[in-house]
Length: 257
Image (cartoon, rainbow, N blue to C red):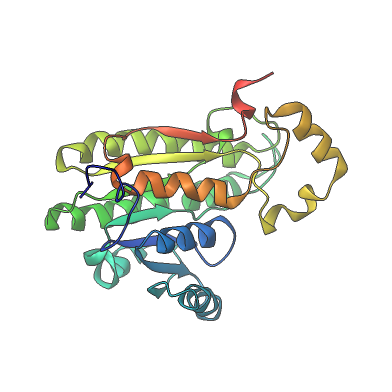
């Protein structure tokens, strides 16, 4: 509930957030930010050991964190999740994804399909399972998908990832339309160049640094924390009238020559 002076506008106290793919990088920082805003968080990854390390990291901060070990790319995992965590999830953040930096004609159809299955199809399955529980509980929940600016900008040599992220943004709009009557919002966030461990080589590359200075309004790499702040806003009462949107967090990359 929002107070008259807005003190609770960004509070997530009393809510539970499931963050898929949250053992490192953007997913872990997002989970940490949600926890700091007061949410209980469920961290997801494929391997029990890495999930346990991430859970311990958050618990050391005093955040209420629980593990959920599952490979979200596997068929049927949505049903497993439904029984394990779906009944208590108020906020779902999908950060899972894979990338294969190859262009048209450079990858076989089955290789293309692997990326689309993880980056798009599995997110539909997860979101459908959790949203069914939200509707059944009368929960005015939040679903937030992590997309990419390449979902709506053409990028050479990234055909499968671009296609999947474009599809994810369409899925976000369609799910927002379906779930809006139940008070559930669905949005996507499209990061530009974010300095994560997975991008370490590019971050340290002077050519990339020079390109970013020319290509973005802010002239630098983004930080995962800057993305996480937008997630918290959308998950909170501050974002209660925002749905069906894709929000670029890219330092101005997508709106400058």
